Length: 339
Image (cartoon, rainbow, N blue to C red; front, side, top):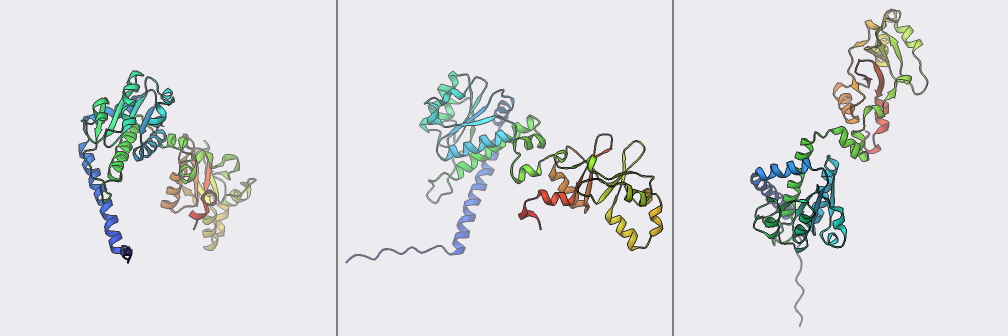
């Protein structure tokens, strides 16, 4: 008689949460330990990466290789030219991507990954500097690379201590640290980041205002000494109508803004006589402005914080060159982000 097959008892939600939190707790504690291990070698490594005239070439096998691809991508998007080199493909011709002036960043928790360790003497012959991220300096990889950033002996978060989890999280954290410290040293700016990341919602938020604003020839602009009535009747422009008139002085510098909401308040309070007075008496003086180099994200912050619907764009002399209107902003945002 056959024994009945054992039944699998599923985790309760409580046990699932307990285990999930334990994994994250273990990895977070490991990261704190890795942070404490950083020393002057990290500074030397980040200086080497920041000053390289070539590429940072990241290599690793298996899960470490996947982490290496992410590190290379992060470096590339933050001002450090980087690429990923598969260690097996390297010895079948791809070593040709390496040149003197490059830096090789090799990842292996054990430091004994044969395919990675075998690369180091080869790249040294090409005049390429080497940095290892590995558990200890005593490993094969640690003993052959010029600079070693140690992880320490980490226990994987896997219940059996086998699946790369804690170690790959730690590798990724060190890679991010290297990328961002090197980026800071290079003086990398958000506008440069936008150049490398023009797509998606992030690229949209980093897009410069100059690419999105309504240009000057579409704006309603009037002199601040004109009457409200003259401003309203004489500042029409072709195209989509803006809800604001920009007021300027004799030098063409922006001095104020008069919006449809301002007009509505005058009419609601029955101040009809004001319509034949100077607009400067009822305009909003010294309105909030942005430069054409500000980002879409900057403008979103201004509109939200100031609770306004229009933001003039001015040049270095303070003269209006464009306008951001809330209706345009809504059109630029993805449908799932518009309330």
